[in-house]
Length: 344
Image 1 (cartoon, one colour):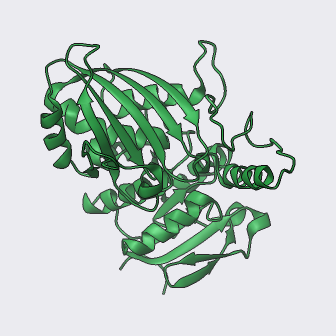
Image 2 (tube, rainbow, N blue to C red):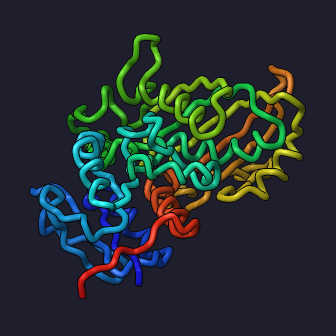
């Protein structure tokens, strides 16, 4: 008997990607249910070669559901995840609501799959921030080899990280500029078309943005609390895929050739690193792909035992939907859940 899976927030960018990935990876589900708010009830969503009609999250019965992939945002997750979990359904949440709860595992399967067993405390598992997910996949094998002391990362984050509204704003502004029309700013704080914005999420008292704080806090929780991390997070006029320029300081030397070899053998990583024109990956090429791509591996001579590299990944997939599905697969692989018995 297969599993029953619900996708909450199925009409959003990540929800749709979750359904696509469940079908692509032949997830062992006998039934998949698409859930959204009341205003989206009846909306048709693709799932493989099937079409699902969205049901209302507000009155859905989860008592016979095994896994809920939650991508409805922090507010709905805060309200619904504990209620869903109380019905014996494991919630894998993509929002920031549960990431910093000590009773909720924050999981990237290639990095800390063993921590997944702690989900039973609340029956909730958290998915990390999209920019953190790709970063820790790249850092983990290097940390295992030479122990990381400090990371400095600058992100170049696509507008899809801000949802459909972000993608629509870039599209609308670009068309307006080409047609000499009015460029209206609604979703972002400044014009995003042909511009970059060094501001993602709200500002905090120390001058960091919440997005930058998330990268620090989540890297510590997932990988190692002793790692020091500074981030500058920037929104760029790219539709899909986040890029990161990463500088790492280690306890002992790691040559670029050693790093290249280590990363080539790491799960979830593809190294494309030729020191020639075009010998690297860009966001356009990573869109629709599952891997975390690493390029431009080189020495950082400004610190002892330093390396620099370029990291790119599809934020809707590895940064969100794919990671959530991989967590569900890990639960099954480790025999931590079994399908509920359902009435015939």
